[in-house]
Structures are given as C-alpha cells and as structure tokens.
Image 1 (cartoon, rainbow, N blue to C red):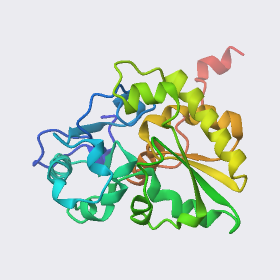
Image 2 (cartoon, rainbow, N blue to C red):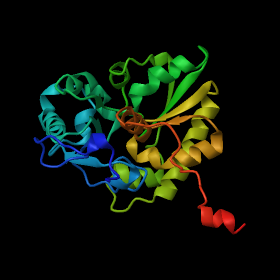
Image 3 (cartoon, rainbow, N blue to C red):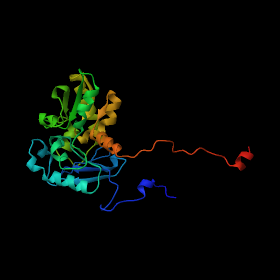
Image 4 (cartoon, rainbow, N blue to C red):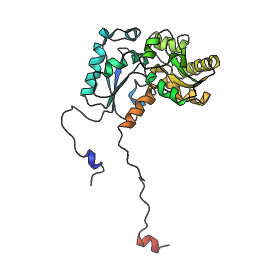
Length: 261
C-alpha cells in the first residue's frame, strides 16, 4: 500500500512540473542572500519557485510609475502559470503596487510585510504603535504605506542607511553580506526606535534583507516581530491540508513477548 495520501495519488496534466507552493518575484540584482532571507530557497520548509523581473531595480520602487511594471507582471504571470499557490516578492517596497499586481493574478499576491500592519494595529491598544524598520527611511514613503491602508500616525519608522554593514552590502551592492553583523545592526536600530517611540509594541521588518535579525530581535526585546518570511509562511499554511490526530501507533507486544515477562 502506498504511503501517499489517497488524495495525492493522482495528478491532472497541464503543468511542466508540480509541487511549488510559493512563487517569489526577485528584483534584478545580485545582493547576497542567506538562509532567513526570502531570496534564499533554504529559508522555507516547502518548495519555492523564483522568477527575476529582468531590468527592474529597486530604484523603480521609489515612485509610483505603473508603466515600468511590465517585467514584474510578466514574472508574476509566469509564476502563476507554473502552478504556485500564491506569489510574493523579495522587497517590501513592492507595496506601492499591491493593487496593480493583485488585479492581474488569479492567485493571491503578497507585495510586502507591510500588508500585515493594519492587522497588527487591530490587536494593539489604540495608544500603541507599530515600529517599521526599513532599508532606507527616505525610500519608504507615505505612498508605500497608503497602498497597504496603513494609518501613518500609528507607525514609527527607522531606517538602516546609517549602518555600515547594511549600507555596504545591500545599499551599495557589496560582494559579501555578513548576516551576523547585519543582525547586530538591526538590533541596535530597533533599540533606537524603541527609545524614541516607547509606544511601539510590535516590530515589522519591511526590508527582506533584515529578516535574518528576527531571532535576535525577539531575544533582545521580547516584542512580536513580523517579516515577509512569516507572511509567506502564513499563506503557505492556508493551503496545507492538515489531518489532526496522532501519528504514533501504540505499541502492542506480541503474545510471545508477553509470555516472556
């Protein structure tokens, strides 16, 4: 008898390959990626498919210009055609185009970790804020927040542009990324943010390169930390067929074993 779930014993033709859960659109860049970053496939415990938006750079995400989106929408539709359950991106600044890209897909589209900010705010006291740590404070503009229905009076923002390791490896396109050093810088930046805005009761990492710091932030400050990896995992869980019950078979000794006691 097969170990497969009976519902998985058959497949319908129409795809070149099967089993990809998430599709992720990557900017046309060569920024180093490490496990913990959504741009590194080992980050996820389920199959991920990547497509590069050729010619589309982070600079194209600073101002609203839908005419530049063709490489992105092409990548998104390619991923959908390959059978992924949802499409995400590798940069939180894609929030600027949440509506545009979602409108062309039949599967869900996740532009940014920023889409979860209204949900987080709904769980906090009215006097509390969400702290957003971004790659560059000047890059994250009111339009990026508005596109995700974020009340700008309820968030506090801290940029990473003044931190040496992050600036050299990400903002300036360095050859080597030291994840430990970046994590230390993010923890320091979060500390500055919390000192400046003590009403912050949750942290959101907008820049996907900052996800490597999630563990250290939790250990240091004890506040909930949200990032794009967590949002992608949430959507993956939404399409996982779970069966509740025990996976363990009780031990039943044979008659011979019982007789030997």
